Image (cartoon, rainbow, N blue to C red; front, side):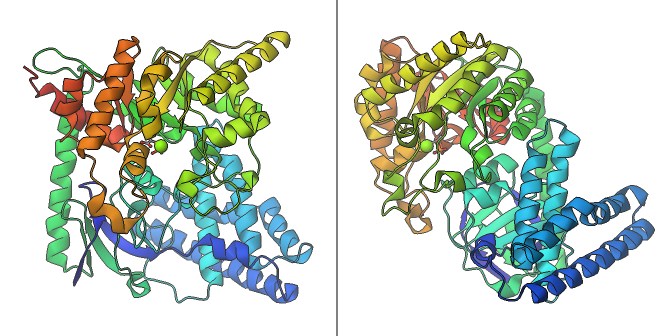
Amino acid sequence: MLTITGQSISSEIAIGMIRFYRHKKNIVNDAVAADPDGELSRYQVAYHNAMEQLQLLHDKTLEQIGAEEAEIFEMHRMLLSDRQFHHAILHSIIQDHKTAEYAIYSVGEELWNRFIHMEDPYIQARGADIQDIMNRLLFLLSGKKESSMDATEPFILMAEDLSPSETVQLNSAKLLGFITRQGSPYSHTAILAKTMNVPALMHIDIKESWDGHPAIIDGEKQCVYIDPPKELIEKYRIKQASMKKKRAELHALKTLPAVTLDGHSVAIYANINAPADIKSAIDQGSEGIGLFRSEFLYLNTQEYPDEEVQYQIYRRVLEQMPGKHVVIRTLDLGADKKSPYLALEPEENPALGYRAIRICLSRPELFKIQLRALLRAGAHGQLHIMFPMITSLWEVRRAKELVTECKAELSAEQAVYGNPILGIMIETPAAVMVAEDLAKEVDFFSIGTNDLAQYTLALDRNNAKLHDFFDPHHPALIRMIRMVVDAAHKEGIPVSICGESGADLTLTRTFMEMGIDALSVAPNSILPLKKAIREISLN
Ligand code: PEP
Ligand code: MG
């Protein structure tokens, strides 16, 4: 057995087989086929092998487990042999001269995108099945000897690096945890892992030879065991069960308020990355959505979604949170979150570059599509629109002007729209320093401690090597947060924390003492945070 330590994002445990993740980027780079006939026969062989594998899996599962469990493989056979899907791949290889990998990837991706944006949760869930099928075909094409694990079994994902757009595409129902060489606990990939409630270990010296080997991730000890003995697996299964029991006990707090022993209360909201996360936010008793990172919805689409698509999604979020506080953040793309349709050029310092509100203000035609969709959705609930990465007063004023322009357009079109509350993220030192002026312009602040720490401490939040220097308790940060709270309260507006520090229980008392109005955290952090608050006495 090997024991390797890294940097963890949570205390969760994962037990399962490792699967090495091959970047799809390479598939896209090798899009054009040198020999289309050869590609066609490679695809046909992979297709027949996949159909055969699925039949075997179906029969084996039917015999050893049951009919219901076996059905999934029958459904995968049906999806794989669907005429339209199959023909689209053949067309891409024969007519467009693409490689088999690229054809599968691009056709599957398009279908996946269509499925996950459907309203019907059953069809949405089929997106994961499309991914399974794509992975099976790509795996067969890679010519690698099949690992002991089937592509449809739960797995621990091992990768050199994982971008946020790759992470949002993972089949979260099968994902037990991640181990990666790159990345840091403050990266967006780690944030996504937290929302999925799986452990992630970063800064691990991974080896491709671990592919298909059993492993245990111990988030608390920040280590991974490769090829653990049976007794250790058993010990961790017991530990996992007791953690599950403790979590279930926390559910007793679900309907109770987050109030200290001496009566100071705070609202607790959930951070979500997709409408699908609302379910866990509700399960954990969230009082609302404090941060919906809207850009995650659009990371993988080939085109920027039109107003109607965006409107339907935002409306659905609000309708699932009737009468509750919902904050939707406008596009925060750029830096590590790249979208093909924005065609962002490589930059020397992407975190300091063309991102978030800077893209939106310099491309108002794009920004207004989102604003119009948000305004229309605002007629269906308690919507708060939040602008990210603000550094200057003029940016807020310009964003507000665009909102007014959109309202005028909608009025002229006699469209129904709401009157959302407007706020900003405080996540740059500049915004902290002018917080008193900014507070006069908006109705709420939310402090993004992830970026605030990055820019204040001059530390790239994605760089695994800097982990030891990334100190969320740094006095500079604490003083800045206090300044922002004071500035907001002086102008009579509420202020929340929506960065990862909001869930850091070692900071909860400090934030409560400052008089923070709300904390917005990953759904699974809500109940532990509530428990901690209910045990604090401030006086
Ligand atoms: C932050 O910066 O703290 C934040 C909440 O936004 P994100 O993590 O998406 O950059
Ligand atoms: Mg941020």
